[in-house]
Structure formats: structure tokens, C-alpha cells
Length: 253
Image (cartoon, rainbow, N blue to C red):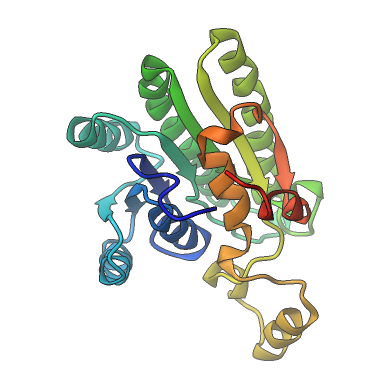
């Protein structure tokens, strides 16, 4: 995507201080958008904002617990008050806690579902209201290939499966409203993030990187930038896995 194709757009990136969220915040800013980086980690927000501003990118940081409705609505209200709109929502906030299902504490299940599914719902609901009022917006959710099943990951898989069903269902509602607002989800595939590295040996990480099974966090930026653009109006309610990346990388937006 050419530089400045998102000029004038305002984006909110949850989980934007690290991992995939950080990479996508940078990509959106490089494409010309004003990006709000949201995270629960104040220190990580400060580091991310400082690094991106050093590259002369338009970014701002805001603390946000996506599981707190009042906080979500306050942050969305703040952005709309300052910038009059939110064109792009990237729901990147997420947690993964691996635990055998039979032994899983209820609080672990609740935490994963709250962040990954409820948090996505709260942010989408708050931002979509403003988008629908303006009749324009792009919502991009981060899913996972784990929806297909992965041992000791039932809470995470359930949360992402719910996210995908939500994406398709809300897309159908948006279609009925006849507005240029879309929602789609991406399954990034194996991505080199702190969450993925947790508990893995250096040897395992090295082998995964060399084999090409694990990709850098910016691997899916072509897809995200396309879905964030006005050119993607006809794409709604889709679940896109990272293997489809080639279909987007050479598009002229």
C-alpha cells in the first residue's frame, strides 16, 4: 500500500503497545493514519509511542482495559471528542494461557474469555456506534488458527471461535444497515511475539524461525492495510488466514 493512503484516517489499536498490535499500529501510521495505541501497560505504551514518534509518525497512547465497559466508552469518547471520528478499529488485545481443560481453574477461563471475546465485543460496540452514525468504518479482529483445536488451549480456542462467529454475525447486521462499515477477522498464523515465545526454548524458537513456520509481527500488514482502506468495502464478514496473504500483497489501493 502506498504511503499516505490512509491520510486523514483515525485508528484505534487495542493491544497496540506490543506484538502484532504494535506492528499494525506502525503500519497504519506509516500509511498516513493518526493512530491511538491502547494497552493496559503504561510503560509499554510510553516506549511504543516514543519509538514511533521518533520515526515521525502520528501516534498517541492511551491506557485501556478492554474488559471494562466504562473505560472503553471513556476512551472511545475521548478519541471522538479530539478527532471527531474513528475510521479504523484494530482489535489486537489478547491473552493466551495454556492449561489442560480438565484442570483449568475457572478464573483462567474467565480471564481469557473476558479479554479476547468480551473485550473485542465492548470495543467493537462502542466504536461501531460512532462509525454507523458517520456511515463509514473498518473493524479488524485478530483471530487464531487455534480455533481448529490445540491441546491445552481450550479457553483461547473458544474465545477466538466466538470472535469469528461474532465477526460473521455483526457483518450481516451491518449489511442490513446499508452503511460503508465492515468487520473482518484475520488468523495470522504463527507469529513471533512475546506471547508465542513464552515457555519455549531458544533452540525451538530458532528452528521455528528457520523453518518459516513462524513469521515476524508485520507479516500480515498487507492484509490489514487493505482491510483498513476504503477499497475493501466489498469485503465484510470474512475470516482470512495468513496463507491468503498473497492475494493482498500486490493490490493497488
